[in-house]
Structures are given as C-alpha cells and as structure tokens.
Image (cartoon, rainbow, N blue to C red; front, side, top):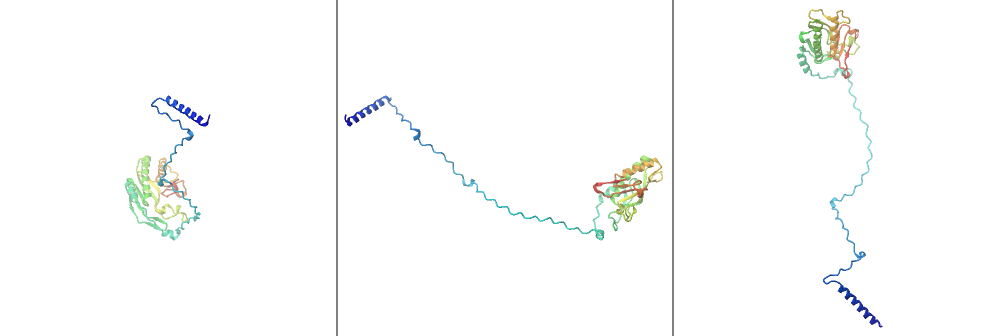
Length: 276
C-alpha cells in the first residue's frame, strides 16, 4: 500500500472518531475545556505597601559630642574673719534695746507698781530698759524698791502670788512685804571682783532676805529655822521659785547664799535651770 493511501485512511479514521465523540455530547451543551496544568499558571502578584510619608520618616541620629574635659572645682573661700570685739571694741558695741511693751502690760495686769528708769551703762554692767518696782499684787511692798528688767520683775510678781498662798496656808495671814538684799548691783558673782559678772550687774537678779506676814515677826531666810511652820513656809516658797526663775540659790547652796534666796533669769543652753 502506498504512503498516500495510508494517510488518507488515517484521516478518515480520525474524522470518524471525532464525529462519534461529537454525537455523544447532548445538544446545547458547551464542552468544558480541559484544566490548565498548574505549572503553566502564573503566580498572583504580591501586594506592595504604600510609601512612608516623608514627615514620618525619622531623621538620622546625630552623633553624640565627645564630653568636654572636667574643669577643676576651686576650693570654697573661707568667710572673712569677724572684727575683734574684745576690749574697747566690745565696750563700744551698740545693741538696740529689746521691746518690752508687752511685758509691761502683763506686769501691770499682775498688780505691780513700777516706773521706767533711764538706761544703765556702767562699763560692762548694763540694763537698757530697767524698771523701778515698788510693790506687787495685793499691796505686797518691796523693801527697798527693786531695779529690775521687766522680765525679772514679771517673774518676781508671779512668784509672789505663790508666796501669798503659802503664807495663808502656813499662818492664815497675808504676805505684806518682801525684804530685799539687792537687785541691780554692778559686781562679780559672789562679790568676787575677779569673777564673771553676776546677773545683778544686768538688773536680772534679786535677793530676798526675809518675808513679812501680817501679825508675825519677819520670816528670815536661814538654814535651820526653829519653827516647823516657818520651815514648811520657806521650803514651799523656795521650791515654787524654781518654776519662775532660771536660777534659785539659798541656804545649803554655798556660803555666799546662806542667808537669802538668790533669784535670777540667766540664760543657759537648752533652757537649763539651776535650782539648789
């Protein structure tokens, strides 16, 4: 058989096969094309994010400057030395007098009788605003009148009210006077010329030698009174003085105070009081 005949036979057979396949498909049906191989399907494109706005883009970090060399710190300058206030310079120093108007009002309300005196200045013995006090509450006289600062006079007036109570309790009679041994005196402690100045030198102290109670002889301050009532009275008055004065000395403290009560307002550190 020749090649032409064979090709013609093949074409006839192929056409017949196609015609048979077409007759097997129902009328009105669109044939479905075969699926495309996966390896021939192109991949879907990956979404690209929008570009970042320029104003939100951080600026590149600047390099930190190298630390400067530490400068040496100069040592602190000591304060200037104060002027020498000893000797004549100390005597020439002028200090404004304190305002004691409120104290004088309280003293008057306590029933005291007093009058202002000129400022005292005898070398280092000074009292810028002294008072001459002649009597206390309830007509209790001071014999002689006392030259005191207002603060010391106020303490004396307050203490005298306690003495009045003790007199009524011990003797059922009122206190009529305080007999004083001294108030302002320009001298050293215990009358020693070489000692530190006494509080008397600043009108800041008073010495009580005895108490006068109506209907009785003077109650003299002494170490061993004979009368038990007198002992109780002197003990009570001495103890109460410690609540008003910063220094209370008397019989038994030392020989210089064997016959009187020394009362003063000397300032001490931390408010310390001396009561002997």
